[in-house]
Length: 344
Image (tube, rainbow, N blue to C red; front, side):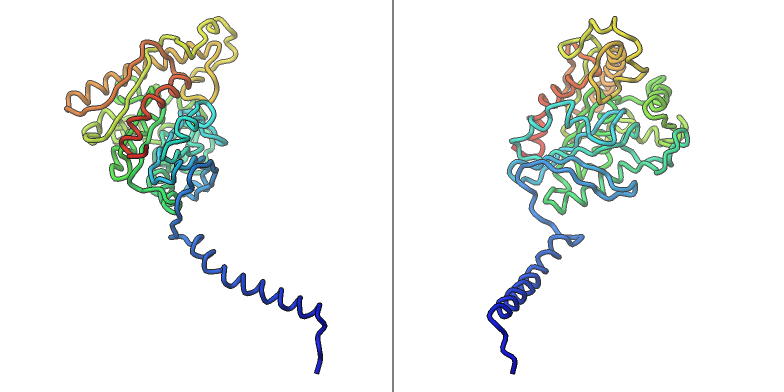
């Protein structure tokens, strides 16, 4: 009979303990990572995740609800949405505004010139490799992921600026079971207005070289009507809405003196929901873009009022197409968002 020394026995015991611990831990690991598993949302904190989609993995910046609540606010970017960060996270103080509130901020990254919609196909002008399917992502794939982290599929708000403002109303109109609130800051809410479809075509070419025919087809295609808030306005009845626009006049967040600066620092649509500050000649672009947004927003207001549909409006005495004003409007709309989601 072989007799093991004390050192050998200790090693064997440690090994058996390690194996037993691994076996006991296995069920918990599988339960947490399973495809249908749900876990409580973290209480506060910031996280960046990649969520699977038909477009490939999409980066999403998330600030979790302060007390683990199930409400979420989707913040949509503008025409020049970047591929590394959602501009709400660095051009505004949105994270600080909601840091103590019981609502999760959801900031999808990417989608330049997409209008956050499902496209017919990839743009052939710029060699786009995949077909945008942003509506599918924001209303199916992303909510499926968030549900595994404790976020409700039905207690959500969506808001955005410029392109994102238009998209916010489209998403809310066609997915009323998901969204209880929609907000538009300087959004283009009357795409059927004379010249608007042509202007969008030019803007998309300028912002990434995208072909609008790949998005919604030629100007007479029915998809343009489907994605026009002015047309689908009756579908918004009963939805909590916040709608704002400046009047195009420079104000506290502009530097009017920069209008005399170098023209070389600008391009045609450099201010259309861009992720940079408005300086130099860009200020004049921001003035023109905001004037157009004001005309669209006023027309949309009249459309809602003719239908007897109520909404909250804020038309400021000054303001251009500039992140400073959109940050301020987010703060103004915060109480209504929290009320709609019961997320105080």
